[in-house]
Amino acid sequence: MTMSSTIVKSFDVDFIRQQFPILNRQVKGKQLVYFDNAATTQKPQSVIDALVNYYKGYNANIHRGIHSLAEEATAAFEKTRDLVQQFIGAPSREEIIFTRGTTEGINLVAYTWGRQNIKAGDEIVISTMEHHSNIVPWQVLCEEKNAVLKIIPINNQGELLLDEYEKLLTPKTKLVSVVQVSNALGTINPVKQIISAAHKSGAVVLIDGAQSTVHLDIDVQEMDCDFFVFSAHKLYGPTGVGVLYGKKELLEVMPVFQGGGEMIKEVTFEKTTYNDLPYKYEAGTPNIADVIAFGAALLFISQTGKQNIRKHEEDLLQYATDLLVEMPGLRIIGTAKEKIGIVSFVIDKIHPQDLGILLDNRGIAVRTGHHCTQPLMNRFGIPGTTRASFAVYNTREEIDELVAGLERAIKMLS
Ligand SMILES: Cc1ncc(COP(=O)(O)O)c(C=O)c1O
Image: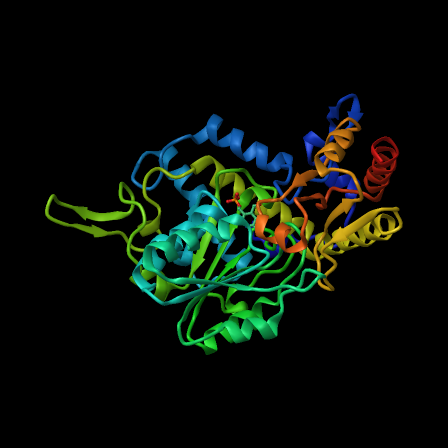
């Protein structure tokens, strides 16, 4: 089964919902309404089945075994690599490296490419709206190397100031590392423009695709990013798996990350030679079951159709925004022109955590707090927000439930 041959044109949210067993459960005696999708999405039955089938049917370690189980497991694991390659338009499967997630992908680049290429006085550019995962590894590197971290500012809508960005680029800029879609605001950043400007000044670019990959069409060749990272668990896949895409010419000359089995060609006590890509960066037994189940998640997305998913989520975003802006005392944080289905908001005199607890009492799961973007919260002068983030299985009726829950909470708390 290939991804393109399975795309279906029509979209039926009830049919989608039936594929997610967790959506049937009750929380505090109420039907679950799950709006914490930017933190992690729920998993369709096909992903759960893929996990169970592996453990029940062909659990074995991969790559080195010659018995049938090992061959079956290896084939299923490597098939996911091909699916990922297609999914993000990578030129070759050697450029797809399995990691534990976005965070590990960024750290891998910081510890390998970063340590090899960043020297005292060099500059790394990130933005105000980065997740802590795309701040801390670069801070650690800058401290170690005496390099400088520079920050792209944003406007009050939560959009990057591109003129200011271009002013930050100098011959000392070695890396630009930005998020494609903000997890706290929903802003879609113009990454093509950002990458092209960085390349003109000779910098390498990493794109954090943790939030974008599930919503937008990703083509790393068209984008021309040097590195692209994302996590399976935000794409209806399992936790503990992610992807680092890197251009082959960079990956080939970068030093190794972790040492151990799988990443070697030959080991003697005098010297070790390293394996070819992508295995050079996949030391030790990988997360076999979850990589296999990630393949099922990618098939679920391509069968549902990214266009369908995007259209449905845009409708939910518009519907929710129209209702929320009417609520007294409520202010949406993040009103960029280009957004995915995330609404972050604050309500006068109400702490997001209190709101979260009251909504949970009605079975509604939202995220409250700083969303691992404390510098962004500081920029807006707030400690945190309440965030509702939408996925393919959410409905307008669920948004009505959220609005009713908020109205009641406002009455109780203000
Ligand atoms: C934009 C962004 N970057 C990075 C991460 C970190 O992802 P993970 O925890 O899966 O490594 C997240 C997770 O919320 C995110 O939203």
